Amino acid sequence: MTDIPDYGEDSRSPIIGGNMQKALTDAADKHEALEAEIAELELLLETSKTALKELSTNTIPQIMDGMMGEFRLDDGRVLEIGEKVRASIAGEKAGPAVEWLDDNGHSDIVKRQFIIQFNRNDEAWAKKFEADLRKRKKPLNVVRKHTVHPQTLEAFVREQLGEGVALPIDTFGIYRQKTSKVTHPQAAKTRKGKSKPDF
Image 1 (spheres, rainbow, N blue to C red):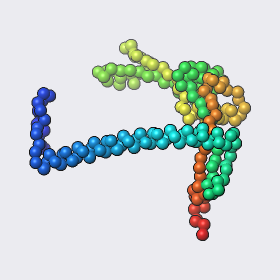
Image 2: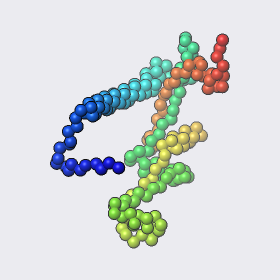
Image 3: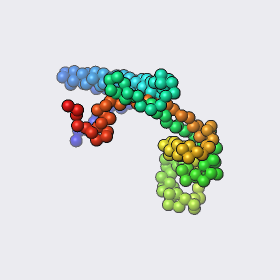
Image 4: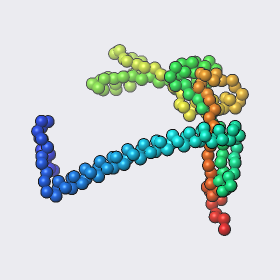
């Protein structure tokens, strides 16, 4: 095993010469180039996602002017306009939303969490607490939270609206979002199990 020299905090890094210097310089150049490339690609990806969302949820639905369903294009592709029900109880809406769910018999979808904070040197006490929550003898910094998983919430809202239940729109942050999707004929056949090409 090779010992790594300790140059101290204030000492200068050792000077490397010869072929190793060139190899390390080339590697450092590639390192920085790849970092820059990744940053550029991540920015491009985020920009493309934003542009696609704008096109799918605003531009195309506006062109269709309220129409819904599937529309076949001249080249055979299918443009589908649909609608998704969105909901959110983030922030100040959480309290009233959880209260409504409890009062209307839907408390089963609410997760009640206790967030307990231990200091770094309290590992032994943390283990003791896990073993006996109700017999704690030391004051604890406890945060109680009521949460509903976003997908669970949206599924619940869709189900209730489908059954004609009048949910409080503002409390659950309910809104209907138009969406669009483009499907190629061959892709549609593949999804249906008809992957055999047309000859």
